[in-house]
Length: 477
Image 1 (cartoon, rainbow, N blue to C red):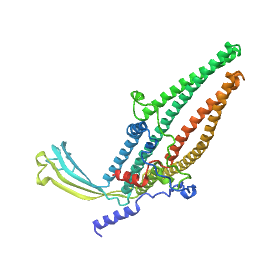
Image 2 (cartoon, helix red, strand yellow; image 1 turned 180 degrees about the vertical axis):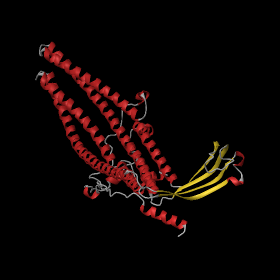
Image 3 (cartoon, rainbow, N blue to C red; image 1 turned 180 degrees about the horizontal axis):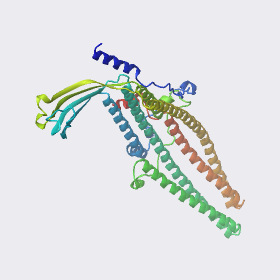
Image 4 (tube, helix red, strand yellow; image 1 turned 90 degrees about the vertical axis):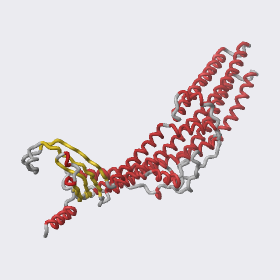
């Protein structure tokens, strides 16, 4: 057998048997299956992407646009998307031939006892080279393809994270905006209570002056009036804090506070809401789809770690000039070229590759665990929101009845106190009940609107997977 054939046989044998054995590491966690999650309702209703326009409040439209355009959290999500896209481009580039140009010229003292004979050996000479070098990872075992797939899935997950941030921010803004309206309404109730308690103090003072009431009734009326005025201040401060929160969400500073006026949304607007847990819940939410993409990315990472156990075969080539003596560098005799395979064999690595493979498997288990957690959280959030929406709708009816009855009771008690038919206590009790009923009704109406928004967002909001996911994938190069 010739030397070249023996070398080829030896190379083949090394490729087949000289690799580190892959360990039998297997994933420990399985994905939850939709069939076991009780998602049996009809598909979730579709909401428009700019769903907040349904509230018919121009200020909502203006501020929501600022939130989407300027919020640092969303800007951060988009920055992470760009980083993931760049990582994908890096991995794709590494799968293609790489060409470099290298040049150097050095003053060298050549050894007398090495491969270069006299007169060059033992003397100082200029030694230089100008070469174009080609290297190409042939990826026999699919390692680079797996890395590209992992980077692609990671970029898709980052794009979906940006969509999830878009939904979360629009929802957070709407919640604070409604809370601002609620604090305005609480302020209105406090203003009305101050007026009522000023009238109560006036009546009590008149009865005291006429000798029909003792001094404690007057002091009681003064105390209640001061409490109502303190409520006015408390709700005014709460409104200011809501303004601060809205401006921060919109990426604005203190100069934006004065530009936000009293909200005027139609809280009774009909949003597209499911009646049962929708069957397509897991395929509608961008955060669930992002978690799923990360599972795929972890699978690809595990495949790449497994491929590390096999020989890495590259194609290398060079063409250029090498010479001793500066004047000889670009002459025809200095021309050089070469081409051939480069093989990297993992023979002994003290367990490094096994540890990397075990880590990749654990990362896959972690990705699956996070996906399962996101699925269960999504179901709970949706179920909780549905329960809250139904409960608050029923509570609103009861609270409206409570306000109507409390107003009648207070007017009757006030008239009887004014005419001297009863003491101050029944009137104050009725007034306290009316205040509580008014505040509870305002709170129930606002919470009902907030929970309808929450429910709409928990089933995907304005995210349309069929079209927007396709656009996201197009954005991933």
